Length: 82
Image (cartoon, rainbow, N blue to C red):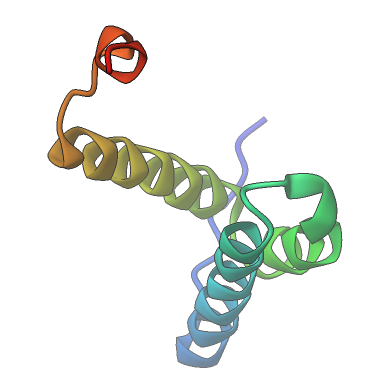
């Protein structure tokens, strides 16, 4: 059974982005502990299409990985040698 896509208007998009930013800020403030950001995630999920939620979560994860790579490689052995 085919479903039609819901296109968000400007106000709905702004609400989605606001809740996305609120959720991501909560994660950052709580050291990535999603259990402390349940309300923000619920608001985010309720205001954004599912595909957007998945996309933004993947993008954030990828951006964080790139940020770590930009900091450079830090071998475990270098921390034990003094």
